[in-house]
Length: 437
Ligand SMILES: Cc1ncc(COP(=O)(O)O)c(C=O)c1O
Image (cartoon, rainbow, N blue to C red; front, side, top):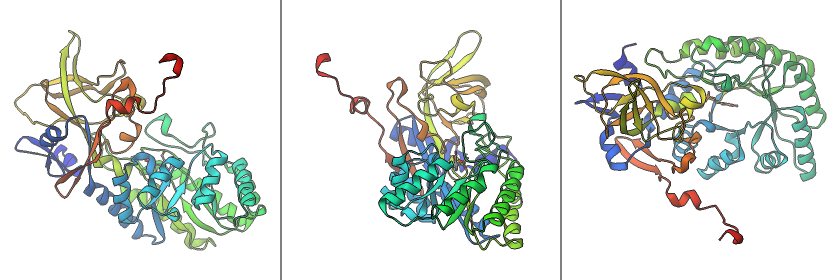
């Protein structure tokens, strides 16, 4: 794919030498709101959701897309997806509270945590949020909570670990014998039989094999095994599944040489296989569910940052910017690539190799390693692309740097949807004991 087209797919374009995002001038935004800032493109979130939904609808109408809130829990993002008809997959009671805050009803929320506490389970029961259990001991505790509260048992599902994982980094591969998530094949019959014995009557199943999967064929083995497990399960213990959840993991092209995930292949490898099984078997009409986070939100956001120091130590050139791993931790945590481009295009400048580094007091604070970029000047602005998933949600106060603001672009207008934190936020919740005063 041509580079300009690759950028255009992300709604980025140079006009009169200035980078525009969703048709808005990035330099003007940087000057109006200050930097660093996260900038979110509302239309991109809507487009990604609609394209994916249309793909699913074209094959199997009983489907739902649960947005993985862990990728981006900004209230405005949740509102946008809610207005599109999405459902939501949460990994903590905090994320569920964020969904409630914007009016998402419990029946549109899944709680897929792991290592659930009794408080988590009780919360799900009391608020009637569907829970994807992670092991058999949690089922016993959940059943006891229902019994103690004398409430009717709602649907449950187990996260099944199909042992074939995939993902952009070992930390994000979530299936395999040595991985903490879910129950393995040989526990599946026991888990659902016990659930029946304990009085549960409605069931679903769940997998999530990893995150950042750009080659849809990487789902193939896991899906095959999952469907075999499901066929065996429904044969042996005679239950009907209300839904079959295939998790998230759909990747996006972070690098200019990468093409977008081929939804046609995803459709063949995942959705068609599911549909074949449903058509052939005696499964009834379970809902087909997926839980993408990155796919829906990553390309919706850029970070605008300012270069404060350009330095050459004789061996290497560094472009120091005001966004470090406190603002975007993915490069440091996973070695992830985020494309970095200047807001001011200047074709005449020499192209120079820089490490683009943040202000955090650690050598690992490198946002872009050995990037060849037109020669940079102090005080210029840069855009860090594809920051809308696992970006702001993973940001921190490290080095006591308050977190950034978030700006939403909607129909060419900009809105500050999150106030930047202040120094006061650094000490607001701290208490000094009397003897130290
Ligand atoms: C259970 C579950 N579902 C969905 C997701 C979303 O993954 P992605 O953002 O790669 O689609 C995750 C991510 O870790 C997850 O753990």
